[in-house]
Every structure is written in structure tokens, then in C-alpha cells.
Length: 387
Image (cartoon, rainbow, N blue to C red; front, side, top):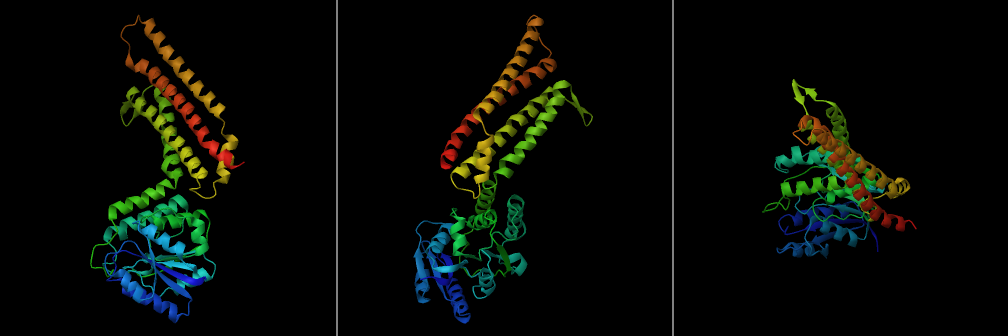
């Protein structure tokens, strides 16, 4: 039977703080006449946490595989509520003033996220690096990459509809579970609201499960992997265009710069920028196609249709072969010049202006041929899926 609200609390050896969380959650449900349940997801506790949960008549769900996100997802899947509110078991979040979250969900929001920076962070509640560097930087990154409007993407106190949780199809198992929820909600164009909340020092008698550098990297890695445009396409275009323009100037003659002279030695690096930039761009398409054909990102149908409409293996092969031929022609020109000198010593400043572009064209042409063949393999799955 479905209730209105499920409060899901992941737990791993939280005997010192769990009673405060459960008492406040029960008081919230009873004093506000909310039909609800409290779910404690045991993630392998070896202390008295589960006995405490039983004393407060909470539902106990076991998840043997370790992971913050895994535990939360397990509890949410097992929940009976129309709405779900999640929060940590360390009593850093107050489970009593949850009415703004519930009212937001009642009023049609799909996701209601707490904002600790708007509500206040008590002294000692959040490490300096987290408060002033990590959390603001990751929240800014999510706004930049995904146009999210959430100012605290790592806040662990948030509510959602059960329907929204199922629609997001959350996959991560660690601390990146929270940013994944924001990203998926944004991509699905869900209605998202923020609620100012206070963050309190936790009541644990041990170190936090959170690992600053490891979990920070996992969160950043997730944001990057879910935004191939910023990870691959934009850096690739910058390197490709910059390398191409500078190479055109350097092929003709040395380029004055800051009172110095850039010559064929710089041409090697600008040619490398062209090749690396092209690799980044191809990986953008590899990533988008893989994500689309495996359902990792929502709303990829238009990308697949456009790609299948404009992508033609034969066109790629033609361009690739033309570049290879162009490179061979330039190589032949440098060889004939060497022959003209009687195969003697050559001026490297002259010859390298032909040799470097020739090898760049050959390598770029081969890369295009290989990339288009690989992309054709990836599109087989997408085309079959449309039949």
C-alpha cells in the first residue's frame, strides 16, 4: 500500500547519531499528520545501529554492497511513498523541519534540494576545503556544463517524487549519486526547487565516510563524463582551430612573436595540436553515440537521427584518402627537392615546411579513415534500434 512519504536514511555504523535522526523524523510525521514510513538502509553496520532502528520501528533494508549511492538507491526502490526524502544518518541534517520539502513536492516539483549555503553552516559542520572550494566549484561546474540552477549540488538532504526517481534511472554507487541526481533532473527538464537548510556538526564518534580528494575527484569525473561537449568537443575545437591557423602562417614563413621568431620547431607543435584536437573531437562523437545507444543520457533521439542522416562512411573515407594523397604529394615534392640538390645536405628550415605538413596530412587522413570505420560500427546499434 502506498503512503505519502518515505524517509530514506543510509546507515553504516551510526549508533551515536542515528537515534537523533529517527526521533526527529518520527516527530515530523506524527506532528504534521503525514502518512509515511522511515527506511533505514543498512550498508553493513557492525555496531548497534540496526537494533536502534528497530526500537524506532523503522523499516530495515539490507544492502550488502558498499556505497552511499547504492544504499540510497536500494532504499528508494523499496519505498512505498509517493514522495521520498533522503538524508544522512549523522544528524548533520535536521529531520524535523521537512515541511518545505514535502510542500514543494505536493505543489508539483519533481525534486526539492536543500541548500546549506543559503540556510547556514554552523562552525565545524563542514571542512574548510569543502565549504569554500570543493562544493562551490562543483556546483559552478554543474551550472556551466548542464545549465543547472542548483546552488548546492552535494547537499544530502533532498526530496523527490517516486516517479521522478524512477525516471532518472540513477546508476552511480558512491558520493557522486547526489550530482547525478541534479544532472539527470536537469537533462529531463524536471521542476526543481531549492530549500535553505542548516548544516550542523555531526554527532559521530569517528571519522566521516567522506574522503575529500577521492570523492571530490569522483564527483568531478562524473560531471566531465556526462558532459562530452566540455570534456572533448570544446577543447578539441580550440586546439584544432588554433593549430590550423598557426600552422598556415608558419608554413609560409617564420612568425614574429614578442621580439622573437617562431619557426619550423613551433610548426611541429601546432601540427600536434591539429592531430590532438581531432582526436578529442572524434572521442566526443564516440562518447555521444555510446551514451545514446546504451541509454546513458536522456533525450538522445534527435542526436541519433541527425547523426545517422549526415554521417556517411563513404564521405569520411573519401576525405581521409584525399588527405593521405595530399600528404604523399608534399612528401614527393620534398624528395624531388632533395634529388635536385644531388641528395646532399638540405636546409631544414626549408624542407621541414613541406615534411611536417605532409606527415600531418597523412596521419590526419589515416585517423579520419579509422574513426569513420569505428563510428560506422557504433551506428549499427543505433540504426537497428530505430527499426
